[in-house]
Amino acid sequence: MSIRSRRVWLRILEFFVIGIVFGVTEDFIAIKVAAGATSTLDTIKVAFWVALPFAIFSELVVDHPGFWKRIFRFRDDN
Figure 1: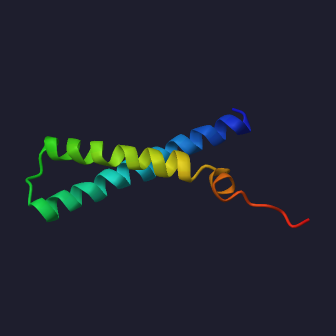
Figure 2: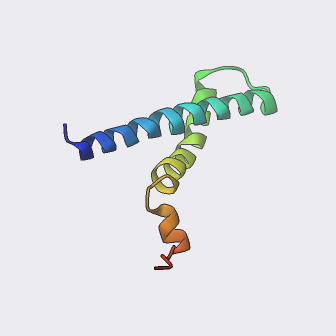
Figure 3: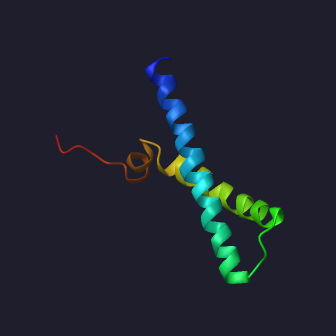
């Protein structure tokens, strides 16, 4: 496995674990506390669909190595 494919695999794994699993868990807890909903598969589905766009944006866009350089157009003083 090449270094590039390892980086891609690591990034996908990070997206899944951090973005999806933590996001769904966080949203599920928020739904339970705020709405007092029962723990059903439908509640987990709602938490998943709410967490998915935020996970995509935060893990694949904001955490991209060149994101902040493009946003702020960093310049070297040299």
